[in-house]
Structure formats: C-alpha cells, structure tokens
Image (tube, rainbow, N blue to C red; front, side, top):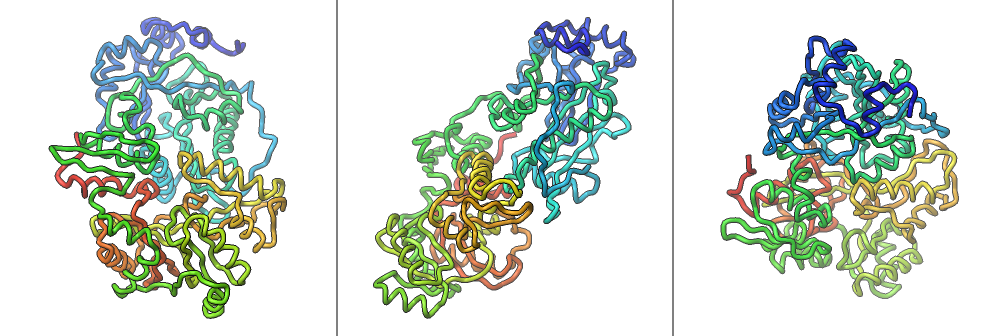
Length: 581
C-alpha cells in the first residue's frame, strides 16, 4: 500500500466501497466539491461524470440518462454501481472495462529512445481534423472541439504524435488533470482515447504518448494516472503492464446506445467473423435485419428482412452472378472484357516456353508475373527484368494456378476503387509494406515487429510474409534480413501493395479524378457486377491517366473505413431498410 494513498484510496484498493453519503461527506470536508456540486467534464465526444462527486445514485443515473444524442458519457469512480443501475436498468449498463492505475512512485523512465516523431498539444483546426480522421480509422468517436470544457475550468488536453518526416498525425491521447477538473484531494490524473494510426511504421508511438502524459502530470506534482481499458484489449494491456499499471477495483457505468451496443448486448452473432464480414453484419443488425451465421471461418452469413434473404460471403453476395464472378477471377478474361469496353489495359499473354517468355520480356523490358486465378497478392511478382527472375516467378505462381500470366509493368501508384451499385463509394492508394530503420535492430526484426503491429491493427488479416518476394525486394535494395538500417531510413520490403501482405491504404476518394471514377463505373458495367474492387496503376489519384490491373469480386469493405462501404452494400441488398433509431 502506498504511503501517500488517502483513506478513500486505501478503502478503494482493498475493495471496500463507501456509501455515496459517506463519500459526499468526505469530499465536502476536504473542500473538493464546493457546495456539493457534482462534476462533469466534456471531452469532445461526451462527458466524464466523476461518480463520487454526485450526492446520491439517483442524481448520477439521471445525468447519465440525459446523455446528448451521438455522444458517449462515462461515469467514472462509481463506488456502488448496483445502486446506480437500479435507478434506470433499462437505460444503463456496467461498462466491461478495467480501470488501471500507475502510482508515479512506481514509474521507471524508458531505457530506449524512440525517434522519428514528436509529441505536441493539439491546437489548430487542422490538428483536430487529423485526430478525428485517426479516431475514425480506429472506430472511435470523433471530437467536437467546440464542446470541450475549457482548460481554465479543468477541461482536458489532447496531445498528438506527429511524424517528423511527413508531418502526419500518427497518434493521439487525452489527459485530464483531476486536481483542476474536480479539486481531487488525491492529486490524480487520467488518460483517455489513446490511438495509433494502424498504418504507422514508427515503433513505440503508443508507449511514448503514455509516457509523455505520465511525465507531464508528474511535473505538475500529481500522484498517479488512471485509465480505462476494455477487458479483452490484450495489446493495450500488455503495454500498461510493462509500465506497471495495476488493476483498481472501481467501476464505470454508461448509457445504452448504438455506440455502446456491443458492450451491453455481448459479442453477438458476428463475433467470430473476420473484419470484412463483421462490418456488414454489424451494419445489418443496426437496421434490424436478421443475421444467420452459416460458416464463421469462411465468412458466410445470410441476411433476411421481410421475406427477402440474401446469402453473402463477406461482400460477395447472391446479386453477383456466377459469370461476373468468373470474369473477375480469371484475370485473362478480365483483360479481354475490359479491353473490349475500350478501357486502358497492360499488354498481356499467357506464360509459355522460355523463348516466348523472353520475347515478351525483351519487348516490354519490365514485366509482372501472376497466376490467372489468385487473390490476396499470392504468387504475384512485379518489376521483373531478367529471364531468370521471370522463370523463378512463373514457377512460384504455378503453386496457385496451372496458368500464369505475363503483363507489362507500369510505374505509378496502386489505386483501388470500390464500386457498389455502379457508384464509386471509396478510393484509396495502396502502399507496399515498409519499415523505418532505428540504427539498432536488423531488418528481419523490424519486419517482424511491423508485421505484429499490422496484425493487431487488422485483427490478424494483414502480415508481412518472410518469403522469396520479400527477400527479392531486399536484395534489389542491396540489403538482407541481417542488415541494420540507419535511424530514420525508410525501406519498402514488398513491391506489391496488397493489404494481406502488410500494405496499407491512403484514402483519396475526395480527390479522385472524374476520368478514373468514370473508368471504374464503366469497368463494373462491362463485368456486370454490382460490387467490385478495381485495381489500377496511376501516376496520381487526381490525374486522368490509368492502366487497369485487375478486378476483385470480393472487396474488403472494412479496409476503407470511415467511408460508408458497408452502409452502401446493405443499401444495395435492402434498399428500403433504414437504421433503427
């Protein structure tokens, strides 16, 4: 037990929960709650209600029930949650999060220096926009900075991590000084809304943000830092355990709403689905559409509403005909159909004898090898310039299909355009997997660390394979797995930008050139497919030049959040079914 813990904290840490009346009397004695005034701090996404500053369970429950639409209030430090829940059981629920605390006397500074980014306060409109884009990627509520409790009245401070090279916001966290917020006699503080960009290649961003907050509040003479973390957030809990946070036996209560639905209804029927199927199931459930999981491992489910049933495998559904699906799967047929529609296509031929392959290589100088029927970037090798490379790539591609294609290689950016109901819904540049040197660790170790971050950010759907293609990319750059890169040096470790092999997306929907959007819709109509992901090589998303690469009949809609891909998909399936209020 810490010597500096007060009587309240000692009782709390022993699991003894004082009554509301005793808590209120204690805070009144300390002068920490002037005139018994309950305290609420607006954080931009909702309010933090300080549970032990409310005079009784009824008043706390009433304040939670009065939550503003579209926000998420949290009642923290609730000593007797059963008394609060009893006031409005139809509206309130016990948050399944754990509250953790770090006593600053236990804090140990970092032994490692993390480079490549800086931490600063959020100040400008551009900062708030960047933080909100980050939060939306992580399925968190955006901030309305106009609703924040002002800092001079004890409001929160948002900090952001900014990449020193690109200037992009790659992480954010919120901190609250309890002494300023509600005259806390315990001299505490708390951390909220920690988020790191899932595309981030800089190691240690989340840890540095937490440490920055700890050291900031330590310098203000405070005693501890509290935080709330979902009980099943293993990655975050590992970080907090590393920093010596300990479980605190106190509770939080929230209001039942659409945002919190998964927390009080439980995992639901889509819990075992992959992210690409789950995003559709979640959207269907929000509209009152019945969901039957047919095969969770395969991503198969059936949606039913008012006598209409549609079976789906992720975004592939009964509305896609077998012919349209086959036209996308067979890249040779895709090429023929889109060429006939007058769209710009690369030169292409089936792999044949070594002489035939060499003739194609000599004609185009640099080529691509891919299986005729393949997905997720399997068996694809790009930018090949020697016959030995071509023959090895063909042999590898034969593992995925007996037929192999040769295509002319085209420089540029890998653009994915999602078309649903013959309307462009999302567009993104796909970037290949890359790492950033730190001057200490070998490339192989950095790849493994980056792969773990990508797996965590994508629920295991994205990882960087240590295969022949990765090794070929490294050798072309004059390095190997054992090479130690200088600090700050960026290295692409794959040539293809497929998300399943560690790539990431940069949304370009708002700047997509009209010629590219029109070409994508024309391609969808030529294939007669209602939902499709079209891959193009372009010099830039806002320029009209393009070359089509392939079409994908099963699009990963979750990759394009916060674009409304799932909403548009369910609109297509059930056009008259709206979200339940």
